[in-house]
Image (cartoon, rainbow, N blue to C red; front, side, top):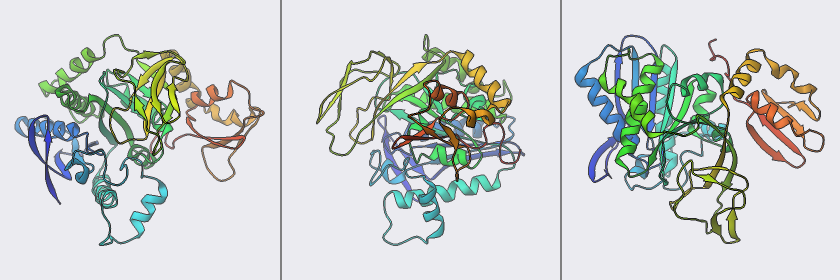
Length: 394
């Protein structure tokens, strides 16, 4: 495995693909990936700190924690990626290609990274003997409070709500080819953790707190066994004062090559914005907010195809309604909605006729977990993730 050094917050640190592993007895497996974007190294730094504490204190522990570094080539240059975004290429077709073709001497950049990362993750998944919890550690080019994001399954929700930070629904479904989506499709519990701005020391501290909370939520650590784990919840709680518990993404602004996109200065994650407010400029002129809400992940870096997201607060009541409907298998009634039919080839997928479907149909689909939406002509294809209520083994 290649080893590299990168500059993080003023100090040089050595990274390799497997950051570390700590295992005691049988139990759940927690896998954390840091640095899948090479300019987001704080997750790897935080993992090294957590492993250092575990090795020195040797607490009572069940299962395994594994830390993995994502894009080593990009980390070595502090770039988001080299040739293409490593967190946008985990499509079924691309994974199948990697698995069925031998390595080529002409492979470089993210092709090599994906092949090595996939092999490392599969080795961990294959040796796991309990539930697998997977966390992707990120930072942002904007300042603001930490938050978690997830594919909307009830299993993911249960894990996510163990973290005392805002929970973002619908962001993962706006993007194709993420590592979280791929791992979730294998039947594992997943979430993404956004810790703050790239270069803030608090981002490393927030990542450490998130890892400790994940270990307690998964059942690896007993309450009170490590002081750092007990302090983690207070650390994150203090960082999100007065923010909503849950937001739902309503809009994503995609940035295309040669758009000349420039975000207006000064926006922070969770800042309130108003419809028609100027948020950015591009080669077509002003980029205005599509609706009222809160801005998330405004783009203040050179690389990236997500200009910003707009979310709206959700009352926890609707999440309880959503959970009840899913436990009752209310999705069996969906084909009775006007303009809706099952997809002929894809499970957990419906085809919606936009000319016939009424305005409440999107809200009903969201309650039932159907958040992935793709428009093809006058049709909308909506789908939800597998393993909503339980994993592949029941």
